[in-house]
Image 1 (tube, one colour):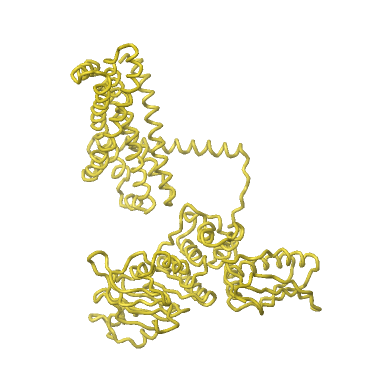
Image 2 (cartoon, rainbow over the protein chains, first blue to last red):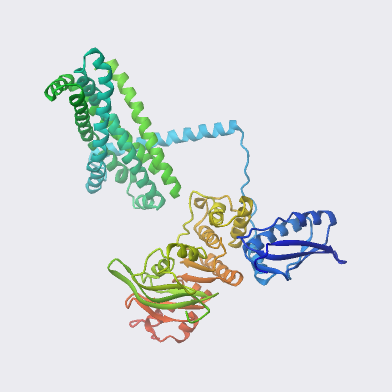
Length: 378
Length: 260
């Protein structure tokens, strides 16, 4: 009996208007449950006054049966049929009563409302507007905190700064090493293919040196740091928001901007130029590797050509940009972290958004720099 | 194991984190269909006991049996089969924040049954209705209160109609009325589902309301120093530490006002 499929048999209507339903077999979540269709049809056509159950052949049951009966209950209610539960197993009666114990509060249930595209467009625009306003406000707060820091009135813990410096400095070296060498090699390769056609292999050194020192060094370092440190900042601050650690700082009268955001921005602004110099050197090393091994250039020739190609201006431009990128990455990361919602999912969104914002800002700022330097004739 | 009514049996269990021994020589058995309380002062390792019962932590020594099966020594597949019949409510609800309540409750059903999407939705609605959350199917955990999150966690714990339900501090952080309602719910679930329920708690009101049987863990001797029905313990225990705990410090304290 226990292995029987769940089954419904709809009986005849008795003299008192009671429709008899026979439930048999095992009604478990494992076996699934049949649809209430036949009963619904019978109720609609023969309009019984009540529903009675025969459960003599009912085997094992669990929530599947209760779910089915709740369905039936709703059906009976809409057709004004009384569902008599007294013949049902006691456990089922109890569960049904328990499920009804707390009635649904009106207005709580969410219905999916179709919003027209124009409304969605408007909402998106408003959201974007609100987002920009809060971003500007955040930058303003950071600026005023920095001003206080320079006047030495900001509360700022050197210990915190040291920890962040370690996180975004020394610990970033391996990935910066790998990426910089590879970028230097790729540049040399691409240049070599073109320049050897004119017998101008020696200019590979110039190409690599100028490209790495002026652009690639700081951009690649920036993108790496946006990926590993900017997202890290957002995740840290986001988690602190979720666990109310930021609230705890605020209620103690400790501004989170000064205690959490400022050390991160300062640390990244300090470390980015150092990482950038490191990336410049390694990029040139990578280029030299390709130049010396593939293009019949001697190391001395390559180094001389490189030294001649790099001007102090282009070197300084790269370094200056890297400081600026560092500030952008840190601000983007901290902003997204502080805007984080209250759930673990929003921490993930904050980290993702920090990387996207960081990279977009880096590229946009780099374009701006290019135009500016061109206009200024540097 | 000799007692056929025993559902979960703990035998000579020693729990440790690395070298730090938390509890030693635990011996108790939880009878089928009872509410079993694991109580003791804060920091005595109550939650650690629970973690060991479901294999989140491995015991340093000893065994946990579910029925006749040795859970501690069981292979991974066998463990999974046992755990599928156990529901767990974690301290903070531990709802998956990227899913709605209906998805949270429906997720185990989706993984372990062949029900269709609509049927899963219906069963999830039933479970949410059982814990008094009808209508909240499409809410995300972050949008509801802490008490509701706990009840939703309970709904997820009973999603697969478990034979055993383990609850970690179910009423902690709830107001007295909500915590009373949760106690009633636990009793009703025991009676209607026939499930064995293990509750880790130090809320006295709950302990006396729902407890059929219990163990008392002492952080100093690091083991069980009393057991039995909580009401009997209050009436008859002569141990000063137990009396002190069960009377909220009014009795049993050597320097206190009265001595039990």
